Length: 155
Image 1 (cartoon, one colour):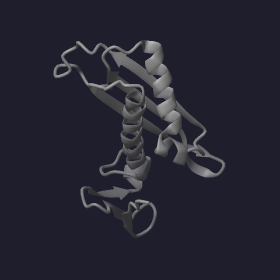
Image 2 (image 1 turned 90 degrees about the horizontal axis):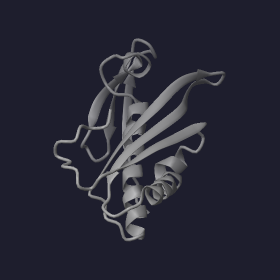
Image 3 (image 1 turned 120 degrees about the vertical axis):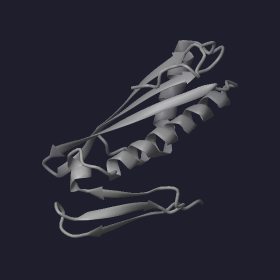
Image 4 (image 1 turned 90 degrees about the vertical axis):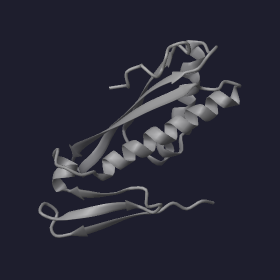
């Protein structure tokens, strides 16, 4: 089976320290700190990387679910919002919202919803994050005839 790797380096105390996150492939390396994680300071944070992983994984799972029933998506755009909240255990990912739009010719909305929910349940990252209390999905099938070059991205 495939093994993926990333690394984190940290120096200093929790609140005054800083670190760097690096993907094993080398395609991303970025700074992180207490302010970038718990405030709106510059840099990335582990939750943002989880959001990116979840959005990417879900999009691929949706493409697979659509393909399994003979549908080829023109495009899939997914945003994941990871909510970090306080619990008695400490800071916790309390909710993840997936929002996806897909352009799929000839697919009924109810079939799209069924396949999107199936992709959410089967997505590798969704399954890895099963301890998160709530993972929601808003799935919109958009008209395949729309000129997607001019369509505004999901907010």
